[in-house]
Amino acid sequence: MARRESDFRPPLMISAEASVSMPHWLSCSEFKRGLYGTDTYAIEGLEAVQAVAGKDARSFCAQHSLLVVKPEVVVTQRLERVFSWLEEVGFPIVEAVPFQFTPTITRGLWAYHWNAATRAHRRTVDLLVEAGPSVAVLVRSTESSELPATLRLAALKGHADPARRQAGQLRYELGNYNALLNHVHSPDEPIDLLRELAVVLLGPGLERVLGAAQRGQTLGAWQLGRSLMPSLYRDAGGPESLDLSDVLAQVEAILGPVDLRREDVHDLMSRCKEEGLILSRWQRIVLTTACTESMRRDVRRLVPSVSAADWVGTGIDHRIAVR
Image (cartoon, rainbow, N blue to C red; front, side, top):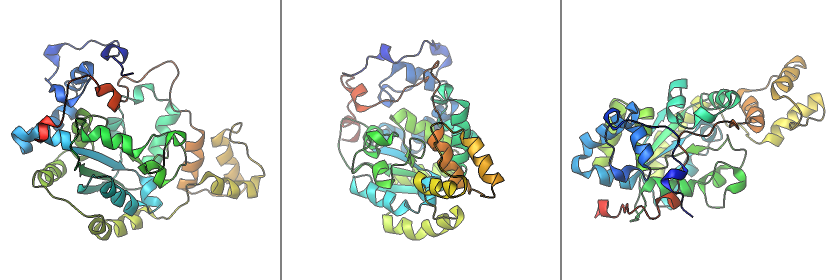
């Protein structure tokens, strides 16, 4: 059953006078539209799209999404599979832009979830996303649907929890390691797309990507493979195994049996160092992500995730925007 607006609106009131008006078709949540109307990233993302697309801004938001490909995909040299999968599921690539996560980008991207994140989660994600290059991929949907491209791609990529993924979903295809080694991120709704484009690409890079979209540019997987992958793989220093059993086998060869359910992971890594086993950054990432408790139990996310079920009954039909 679809959630009502009151089911996921946090107890926070925002004055209309303090919020830029966000069009209703950007989000099914009135609260979220009000909140993002106070968010500089969301405002600048909307302004950038309106400046390039003009009266076609709604169509742009209905048809496009963003896939952030994280460093674990690059270091395992699986970029080609990401690009080919996008083509297979009807999301041709408009542009792909390499970038490096910084603490500012990371906190900007997950600002409305990380209010409920533990300190350990924030530190572990920093260790992970700053370990190598990432790629921001703008895609265009080729399917006519009442749902925006963002929601459909979010469902197709699969859940962060490996136990909830299904064959054919991108995260399943790339490897089921743990919930933090989840390979990719994408926005839930068009309003998140605008905000996250500004977080990751604000400035001339964003203008260039939006211009490419407006011209109808499409890049093939083979073309991106030749232009992007060699330098990204070189910079990432891979390939590396992200399989926990591979890392534990190396650790246990020195320390003996290890039970991660009872072992403090930082103590474990210190013991490795004392015994002369120098773990690589990616080995430390594999161990740490396997043991990190991510969410606080006393705080809920300011903005919960949104799914297609939340749009049922809203009356927002994105087929109208692309006729």
